[in-house]
Length: 117
Image (cartoon, rainbow, N blue to C red; front, side):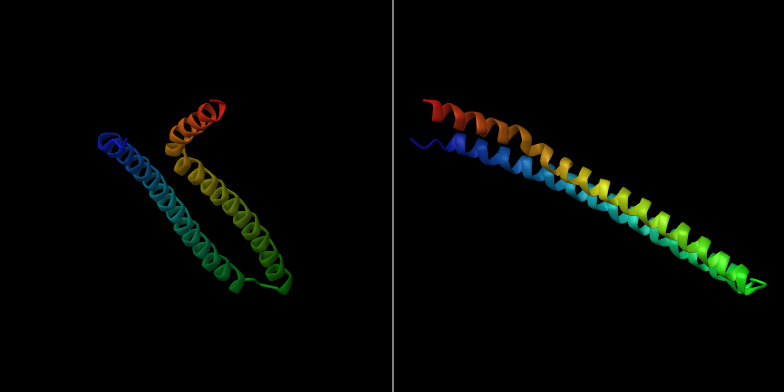
């Protein structure tokens, strides 16, 4: 027989889990957006500083060396930042799934018990 109290309890638990997951996702996306904004600002400032150095170069060889060093540093910085943001996305996925671990484990156990019976 259908029990309204049990149904109400289950729906409240499900809503709580969804809210916790959504909260974790929101915090993760905010952290990623902040990190991306900080990197963009730093990258822009580095570009402006490089352009100033490049315009004051005394020779073509000096300009070429400046450009080579800038591109190398820029590439390494981008790769580091991309790795960091990738890790942040992985952590976001883990944090968003955490609230579902206990209910999924409970449901799995219930299915296994029912299947064994």
